[in-house]
Image 1: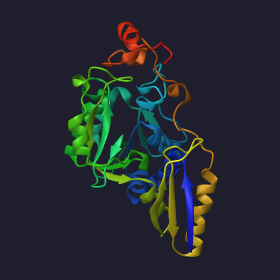
Image 2 (image 1 turned 90 degrees about the vertical axis):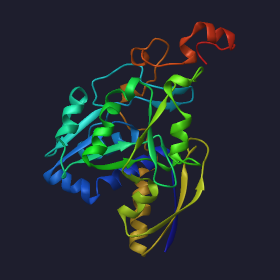
Image 3 (image 1 turned 90 degrees about the horizontal axis):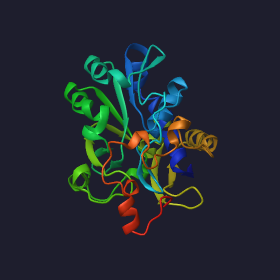
Amino acid sequence: MKAMITLTVAEGKRLIAKAVTRMPEVIRAQQSGRILLKGGTTVSAIAEELVGVPMRISGRISPRGLKTARAICDAPHSMLIEAGRWRNVDGELPEVVASLGEDDVFVIGANVIDAHGGAAMMAGSPLGGNPGKVMTGVMAEGITTIVAAGLEKLIPGTVDQAVRAAGRKNVTLSMGMSVGLMPIFGQIVTELEATKLLAPVECQIVGRGGVDGAEGGVALMVSGRDDDVESVFRLVLELKGTGTSGAAESLEECEQASRGCQGHRACVYRSPQLISRLGLTRSN
């Protein structure tokens, strides 16, 4: 049996979240280990699946550019789950990472992925903020890492090329904050892998892009046994209309002089002189 399914970007994140929670490594960590989540919209969807709690969203690409949250809210940006309970570990991230062991899992999102298994995360704060300070530690300790990233993050070329091109301090003008890229190494789970994790089916991308809220969306052809294909189809129908995951108060983006963007660089919206010279208004 063959079935064609479509997913908006937000729906794709929810599908990935459902699949990640069913991965053997994650199930084992739920039973006898710990799960460390680093916040992003896809990882927040995973947190919502695991413990019913949305996470704080920091950086994002919005219609205005590379932005962060307007205010820092109480929702966790880094969350540790153990024995079915969660806690905010934003203030103790290095210590938590140092304590992780072979039964534990680290789940993180990505801003770019490539066809060769490369992945990287944007960094708009000095040293990549708290997550940037522990990323190498996670890799060095050999912690099982899952990179949850939708197909809208897939780029032509390689992540290596993107990392070399980016950089916080070598940008003069930026629509929002200038960013660098931090490479991430782990098992990447997109909508393709998610579909195959949720049922024993084959899956192929047959279309990308869309309109009316489906910009960045994907069309997939799913094939396999009738009951397996139908189970995927029903699940996607249940996801239809779901919105962006994350703590609602953190989805409001920064404005000039917002608390969350004080350490950012090259943002055109923060310079009255640049706004005037480029013929912008503060509302652009």
